[in-house]
Image 1 (spheres, one colour):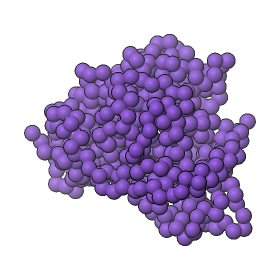
Image 2 (cartoon, helix red, strand yellow):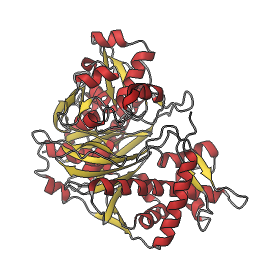
Image 3 (spheres, one colour):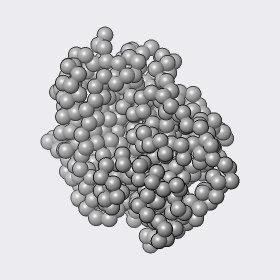
Image 4 (tube, helix red, strand yellow):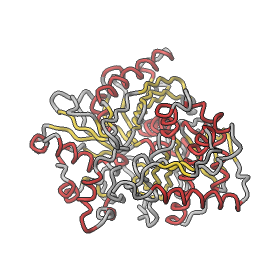
Length: 494
């Protein structure tokens, strides 16, 4: 058997290729950023051709750096930014336009139109999702409408998909147009119970089903790769947050993880039953092993966390490198009563308020760069606290610890503040970048590299733990001030 597993991690700001050994240790990694395109306020796009090129580049770079070839890989998995949507020509394989990114808000009017007098929960019973700009179905409809593509789509000339479908199409040389159940569950077009495209939903939203990819299980043989990965089985596709749930070995109902990336995403395994949310969360597929029932999850999605640090760097110039934000935040003793609500794309869970926009409140002549940096970091922890409270309300589970991963976990100030606000231990695994690890482990399970989920669980180990130390009265005060700041952000878009 080949020695290693690999994963393509096609994220919001970059694409990575990572190779892992049996214990989950990183053997090779290469990463390249791609352009973030902002045509107008509220719009975010990606050039899918650039992403294809970056994917090819990082595969070659990682293999070369470790002296490996495709023959050394037992299987590869894909993990991806989820709701980002594109359309391409089936014959040429070229995109018809830039992809619309999950953060993009251009479908706000369409979502209101679709809600009509039934409200944003019109499709929630079938999909587990509220009508919001976040999801892929309305994005596809917008592209079809505004590029006048309905006739071509109805003829079957076009392929509609998310970034996993695009990556698989290219890895298979155009032979497979597929998506998995986790990504399909983010489109508003899939019935959560049947795991198939729903013709009524597709008709209502306005996306022809024959332009959509085939839905396959997350974990199972999907295709044989061509090109630089020729002959390697593609054996797993998982949306990034679902891959992190798998990589954190959250295989038992009630286990949860929180990923700190461009945004923050908390998922809790709810077993083989989808739990409807009454607290502003999403009901989604957690992962799906071929031949078994899907595992469902509750999710709290936060749009802007790590990307806020990038905004401080790129838009305000407060820092020159993202890693500098912690030192700047530590230059002050506390937030100076400054709160930053980063509602750049509205507020996601648990509020679901597309009319919100970013605000910085509590500014006085006393406030300085350090207070703004600290408020930016603390906003991530405050938003996570809101999601955890909603998840407890929906599930009845009282958390004793939170498994965390993602780039922002390197920020000690943030992680300690997060533990203080939540009142539970925050636990970091040995491999913090668990999205790629989860996709690789899942692919390994599909091809028999691992025999069971228990064997995969044995690869998980703790690297660090932060214990809460803040007085409850101080937590309540800070949370109350945050709630007031959130109120200030609402109703900006009319």
